[in-house]
Image (tube, rainbow, N blue to C red; front, side):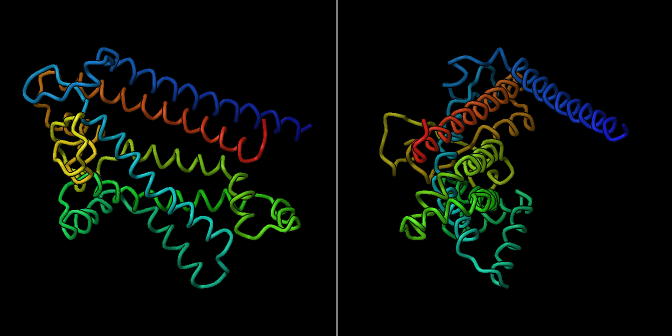
Length: 295
């Protein structure tokens, strides 16, 4: 009788926690979207910001955030996935493996402001690039690699050994087994790691203050010359992101409608994260079905 009572109490408790978290999340999202509802229009999304006067938009900052996301994922996902494969499939127990794992754990707990200062020293000053899009992408890569590596490693380790043994029995090599069997089976977990990484890219501000900069040139989207300062394809130009712009608007408050701009930018940032999460999960599910032959 007591065990049944304890089981009911535990069940009610966990259901209550789940409902509370869902209600809290829904209320938080609803509040942010409600506060920024007046700014959710095409003009706000496409026009450049105006300083010392009302009515500015977030066009360059929104584009910079998306471009920074793409560049950072292009750099960090292959490296993080490769490191996860090595740690799960090739690394042998020993001092070197433990040292690598300790380094990954230490790097994952490092404050983003420290990574920003490191990026300022290495990617901005030593390379001579100055405040630039590529400097911000490399700093975020340093920040996100531990997360991507650990998630990839755990996802690959969770794949049943029976799948590997079946692949070997059919004459596949180790690399063919990893590419054709293990990685597709671990794809849902890997997609989760990519989503976590992308969320951090969207919301990061401290590391980008010292690497990508706090300004953005007037972009000419008809100019496709990567070496031009006004070209959107130039990765060596300053690139203020949406999160940095929100921080700057709130801290400086030079525009008369600074609060409305910050609320609108926060709502757009939240919608970007939600849309990316939905698209990433849909893409991951589609890739998983194609690679495993499921319908």
